[in-house]
Image (tube, rainbow, N blue to C red):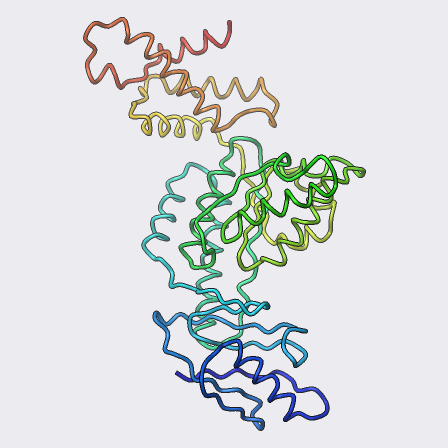
Length: 371
């Protein structure tokens, strides 16, 4: 298979020598046999093995890496070449896995904005890959994001699904999410912070680094430890943009303040996804799903009282402290506890009795909480 590498611009002076030097640099990195230098068309044509799965990707030679100035975009089957000369396989899209993940996302309650973000990302990656196949120079770009919203709105759960989708799309090399907070990144002294942050970043390479309560990274103008961690993070987001996804999560207002702390951070975040609070009806639906996952059935007669509980709990708590889906999960777990107390008094309970969460179980939970 013949692959043409197009030289964008030749420097003034001995063009033939410059092109020959550039050709040798490329030839050494691709490590294939005979190749042809065509000075008139400013191309280097290499003979390379046929690809195993026909996926086209790009080779990028950035300024200062190749002998010639400027950027060289070239096409080669199956591999993405980085600035350091290392290669990365760009596999075909795992359509079965991707379809399953999309169905999982659709089945999730609420999260309309997050679902739209996922579909847009999938569309972007598909089109960029088609551009590769068509011989058009394309940059896959980075997929760093901010997930903003109150606790229990699905940010962590959706980040795991998002990372799995990037793996299925062939963009991420690993289906992995490393979940951390400020405590995992910031040390007790300046040098230690940089070392801890780099270790965490290294553990996430190939997958997704999810930083919960990211707004706590920098507490104030004199938080030098936090700023050191942030500086390391920003550098890694750029240096590893093709092999690392960083998701910063936290309260909406606080995340806006964090992005303003360092302009470099804001410029590297192209996507901000708002995770809205669940409605009371959605929380009842989530409760039903949590119960089903645990092999219980929530009695429909209990649902009006459960909806009323969520409404009252939200009104009593401040917006930032209401648990949303966590409150739904906690209520089901407490109802299971109340159910056990109730059913334990039955000599020979039926399958129906062993599996059904009833309104009286909810009443017992509310009574316990009001003690």
